[in-house]
Amino acid sequence: MGKRLRGAKSICCCASPRFSSSSISSFSWHEEDIWTEIAKYLDGKSLVMLAATSKWFLRVVMDESVWKFACLRDLQVPDCSETAFKWINLYASAFGGSHSYDFRQKEKHIDWMRIGAFCINSSDAFLMENLICPSKLPKEDTMQNMLNSYGSCVLHNIKTGIWIADLQLVRCPVCDLNTCDGTMQVLDVRHVELFLTEGYQTGSWEYKLIGSHDIRKHSDSASGGIFDIKYLKSPSTAELFNLKSWVGSPNDWQPKAMVTYHAVAINTNLQENEGLHIKYHVMTSGDTGEIVSIRISQQLL
Image 1 (tube, rainbow, N blue to C red):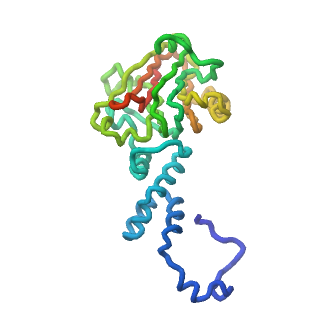
Image 2: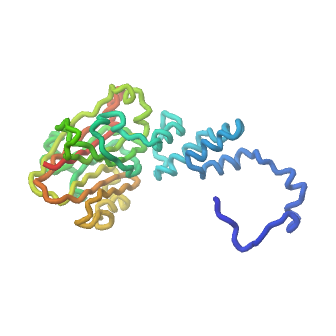
């Protein structure tokens, strides 16, 4: 769409009998199927502008298929789940410029960037901090023992579907001074429906610490990843473990991130330090107890 025809200087109605006056008069500008397909190639802002032109276009643009197509296209994910909310609301939630720290600890927030979106289909997730593909999954009796032994853990009862990933930069959580230079990076992922749920909006759903882990030696980087266990060894996920393909050079201090259909990972190169303090938080829904948001935070010791 939007490309000009090449090779012809002009086109006129008399150039071919196919463009007779009778055929033009019979053409209807209000062909719903045609405009539904055209609408699928517009971004959210353009869709709203088109809907504002007339009641007829409003009805066409508000079709669920249009906003579902736009949402999946702009999030760059496959159609991996059903949803309890309208796709237009999911689109607004995903692309409205909001992030989780707008609702929680806003005074601590410094900056953020959108990484992308991925799908969790299996309801089980693998969290890790070293981005080295494990030969086998950790098997310890508690979450904390898994973190102490492997620097990774397994989560169950994840809400399946589309998940949105952001990288957050926040102030040191143990300091209340606005002038404090201490910072912490957070890999912050959430189910696409989270911001629309009543439990989240009212504040009754809170993040809970499920474990922490210290690396008490110099760390070259602060990294972390969240993977759908079912696709941990898949070819697309393997790209995340090829660090040379996306991680910055040793003197590049800018955070880097990569997302695939079923996983997300971050890496930030570090200058001289004494290690990292890593925390793992989850938020669960009140009715089913499913995990709807996950955070991996990393702070210099």
